[in-house]
Amino acid sequence: MQEKYRIFTVELHDYTNEELVEFFQSTQKEEYLKELMVRNSGIIRIIASSYSIPNYDIDDLMEIGYIALWDATKHYDKARGCTFCTALKGFVRQKLNNLYNEAYRKKRGAKEQVISWDELEEINKEYYSYDDHSDLYIADFLKMLTGTARKVAELLINGTSKGDIAKLLSCTPATVSYYIKRIQIAYISYAGEV
Image (cartoon, rainbow, N blue to C red):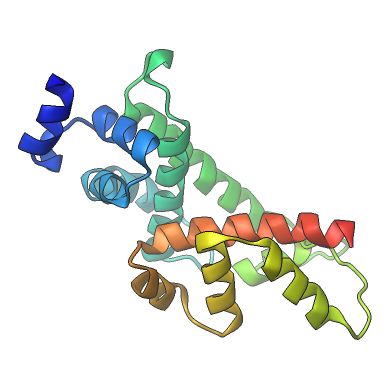
């Protein structure tokens, strides 16, 4: 009872990171995630600015850091004995290290350096042979999606940018990036079954 009273009488910025994570994990309310993003943007910027990755500016690296924050928020467990900031630093470094390694990985069978994220996706993409009915596969795939994931997929197919999708759905760009990643994983799984 006392904890519920505290939620209504205290401002979000008065909570600790750990309390905000706990609230987000139990309610999935985006206001807690937004507060965590604002509060921890300095840590993410410091870590991101220490990386030099071709064709990525600080804003791109910050976006990847916010995706790492989303992951850290979902998986954080205070019973493991570390603070949320410590866990967040590990998640951000892991994401940026993966990106750094991918950026410097050589194309399969070629000796040239990978120069963009699109090329990286092409390298790692699973190729499936489809006949002339590929639009039918996409339509069937969209029917399988539900809720926000379906809305995001439909807006992407219509050419809407991530920023515009975030505005239309009243969420953050990091949230949209998370849904795009989930949609990509689901589509690869779906395409493998077709």
